[in-house]
Each structure stands twice: as C-alpha cells, then as structure tokens.
Length: 135
Length: 135
Image (cartoon, rainbow over all chains, first blue to last red; front, side, top):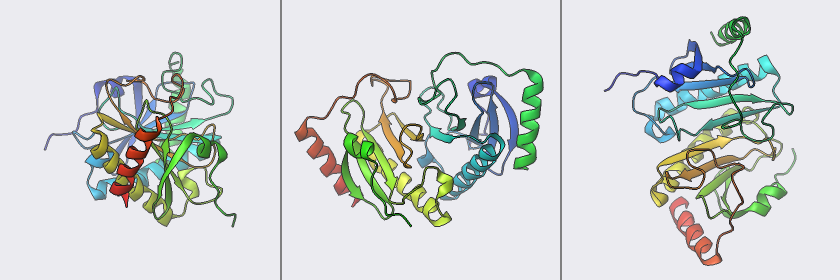
C-alpha cells in the first residue's frame, strides 16, 4: 500500500485546517469564496468508488460535519458539494459556501476569474474558527 | 408533509429513467455528456443536511450504484459528482461521465456552450441500457 501524500497542487493552493479521522480538511486560498476541501488520507483514490465501504461511510459523515460547520460559520445561501477531479486526480471533495451576492453566482466557482489570496490576519481567524468547530 | 413533485425545469431538461427506492433517476437531454441526475423523492429538501440520517445513507448507496452503472456503460475517464442547486433549489445530484476528449474537459460541464438534444433512437437505447442495469 502506497503512503498518502497530499497532491502538490492542492498543497500549493490551500491552507491545512485539521485532520479528521479519515480526511484532511483544507481551506482554499481564495478570499472570494469560503471554500473547504476534504482529502481522505488514502493513496491512489480518484473516485468515490475507489474507497472501501467503511471509508465511504466515514467520508459521508465528514462531508456532513464540514457542511454543518461551514453553514453555521458563514450563513451561506447554498452549499456546493462536488468531486470533479478532472485536473487533480487525487480524490478531493469541494464544499463551498455560496451567496447570491458572490462573484460567480449562480454559476459554479471553478474557472471563474482569478483566485484572490487571503490577507494573512483574515486567514488565521477563519482557520481558528474552523478548527474550534471541527475539533 | 408536502408531496414530492419534480421541479419543472428538471422535468423539462431530462428524460425519466427509473425510480430507485429513494431517488428518481433522470437523464439530462444533452448528447454532449452522459449525464444522470438523482432526485430524492422528498419535498422541500435543498441540501444533503436536509435529509434524515436514513435518507442520507440511502442517497449515498444510490449515488454509488448509479456511478458504478454509468462507469460500466460509458468507460468514462472520470465521473463528476455534484450537488450545486444554485439555480434549481430542489435537491438534485449530478453524476456525469467525463472524457478527456469531451467539449468541456477539463472544466466542469455547467454553463459550457449550448445543450444538444439527443436524437430519439439514441435516447431510447441509452435509457433502456440504464434501466436494465439499474433494475
């Protein structure tokens, strides 16, 4: 079994928030959208179908937990949940807080304009709030 | 409890394939992408979080089953799985077979160009194959 290492592109584009039982929780470094990414710490998985039944169950539980926290912290109008993986094959699940006033609404966020990196102080407070809620 | 009725826009854009225990399975009428949509027959749900624990489990099982069938029928290079719901609020889960040669690759399919309706004979054979595999 290959050891898990985070994809270099996911690593470059995100901040690490915390590790849940199965998944690493990442914050996309894009101040335009509150955008979390779950990456199960399993090597060589690209589809939901590649995980064991136990991991699929755990992933669903972690998805729901992260959705709840993100909804409560942001008051989002809608959450977008997606595994696409057309560019980065390592399985990763997007959980994004959407607002009727955001820059991409009502379209999806992928491929919309240019990522805006967080100002450092804002990132720290957001990551701290997520860590408190998730651990 | 409000009775379930399929959203009019989902109804207009799709063919009905079959009803699983929880979800109606729809085929998006877009010949560019093999694209299924699961709609749990529950009124007034917009998020994964709105369903009971039992329904969440069942929805995951139906998602996995439909992914397996779509993968086997199409030989997709990647499956895209998403609940967005920014435009149509009735909960619906997209399960889309993606190919490195398709028109939107590697971007997402939403908002890409214009939907191409199926030729009728092709639809019938695809729906029949899906029905055989799912029932």
